[in-house]
Image 1 (cartoon, rainbow, N blue to C red):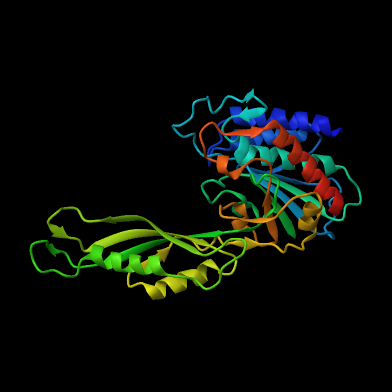
Image 2: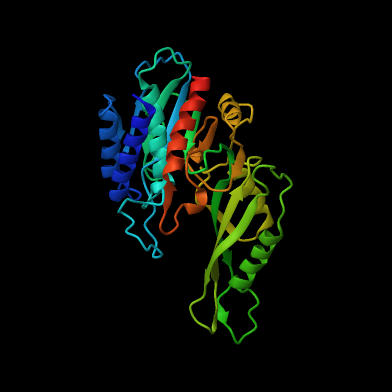
Length: 353
């Protein structure tokens, strides 16, 4: 297959995906489209719920395996859209439509790369492609549910819009519910055990908290209180106050480590929703990173979360498009971005495979 034909097929698939609503948990039709795309090249897939995956033709269990992964699901279109989010429209060299940038462009670019190498003999690495569900919702039926089915993975490229620059570090996410106790009583009386005030004391401690380890890629650990809820009547001191803490964690700390540190600083009862969404980091000397640098790519640290957080192998995030367009109204990807994404992925893997 010529690369121009591969680009045309990728664009055609992306337009089909835009026409197909694929919210988290509802990716079955998008999964079918990707399966049909791969089958058109004689490639058979396996499915687990709305996830699908397959291996290169000459898979050798004695060789290390590289995962190519991106997600099928999208967020729901916001009210700022001026275009039909499910109508793929090309204008001024841009393809508009929901999921075109996040993460349809990266997905079809990685699919194209897999097709390019599928029939190649004597590769140094196996290739494993996985188009997965529920990334946007961090749901239970996405890549995390597929990992026990897949063969061992030695390295992964997670397709997200990064301008085709490798994000070699990614901040983790820890969401914590805080519960501050108090004593209910009439607001006119001298009750000093106010749950709201107790919560505010803890919130102020969190606001002033500093962490010693600062990453040159990801910066500081960022602690933000994003929600607070208490009280039912103006004249009743509440007995309880609930608040939510959003913590973005650099590669120097684990989620459980950060939780213990916050717990020591507060009097409220803290409950973590999950410890699974950890930060990630890969050596800048990794062969893929070095190959990307030779092709003019630069490395950086990403503040946004992806399916990297559920992987337990070295990984990086990379793909055509721009992260700032993700979840925005009138989402688009440049046709030149898509073409360059396919070209660069193939060129990088030609150097290491």
